[in-house]
Each structure stands twice: as structure tokens, then as C-alpha cells.
Length: 265
Figure (cartoon, rainbow, N blue to C red):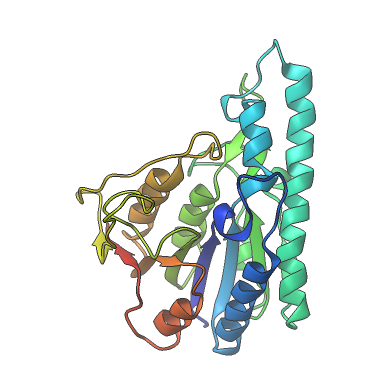
């Protein structure tokens, strides 16, 4: 049976998070070229992508991560529908790029199959586990329904990464592709003197930052915590610079230690 690679393409990697619905097509094409090489190399691939400017700005404006607010509920519900529509549009850029390289793929919007948020969400992963070995399954962070008074909430792509990496059989690699740094840094990458950490675990001391104006799902802190959960079950968990996708090829196909950060339990 083929080994599986689960890859998270950060929203800040494939979109300009500061500009509403602004995609980076050249970056997406470089990433899907990498995926094509993995598939040709005999690996099954599951792709998760972030929302970036197709979701975070609207979600922030309407406080969708907090659930329904009776004082603005009508606007929130319109925003929920809009974000879901926008995320399907963004996923379409990814699947179109995959298809242009001859890769069969299927996009599964979480709003269609998930209830609840966090890594304990409810929803069957059967379509991911049962897909043909050469078909790339695609999903993404999304606004999903909740079975409580909050009515809806935001399911992070990082939470999807946990379930897909841990519960799908034969996952050998779980890779988080970043858009602003070569891996996990000892301080925010924009800070002078920031250095790459070769490895990170929850005990590692590192100063992180979270741009609450652009990100409603927890930023690098959530990503690191979720990756450490995955590392309890998956032998190779990495943060790698998505602007250099050849590093994923070096890791998965070449068996080399890439520039990046290995995440430990």
C-alpha cells in the first residue's frame, strides 16, 4: 500500500492575507507541481489549505469564530454563506492547478461534512481513506455548523491536519508549508536576528506572534501545538518554507533532511 503525505498549504502562502480575495497563482502552481512529483513518486497525497484573504478578513469582521451574536446575527449568517462560497472558490484555484498537471483530485468542503470545531469535530474521514491511490483529496479551513447555541464556528485547517494525519492509514509525512519563514523560528521571522529552529517540541522556548487582524484561528502557536499532537503518531512532521517546495521533494523522495523544522511530540 502506498505511503501517504498530508500537506497543509498555509493561507498566507497561497494568498495575500492583507488583501481581500487575492490569490497567488504562481505559488499554487509551484506547489501543485511538487504534488505531481510526489504522486509520480508513488505517494498518496492529501492537501489541506488555509483560508488566507478568502476567509479570515470576513470572519474577523463578523466575529464568526465566536458563534452567533443576536445583535448582528443576520449579517453573520450572510457572512457565513459568503465565506463558504469564497473558500470553494479558493479551493477551485488549487484543484484547477492540479488538474492542469494531469492530477485527478476531489475537493471536500468541510461545511458539507463536518459538525463542530477543534480536533474533536464530527465528520467521516471515509472519503479520504477510501480514495484511489493516485487521486489527491483536497479540503480546507471553513465555517462549519455546530450542534449548540453558537450555531456555527471556524474549523481550522490545522485541526483537519491532526485528524487526517493520525486517522488515515499509512501516513508517513505530515508537512506544514509556511509562507513567511523557513520553519519555526526562535522569534517572529520579521524580528531582527530571528533564527531557524532545527527541531521544536512543546518544551522548546520560542517567542511567537499572532496577527489577530488577519488570522482568526490561532496562528503559529496553534499550528505548532497541533503538529506536536501529530508527531505522537506520525514519524515525520515538519514545518517547511512553502516558497521552496523542492524541500518537500528532498524530504519525501530524496530521504534528505531539508531546511526546516522537525516537530517532535
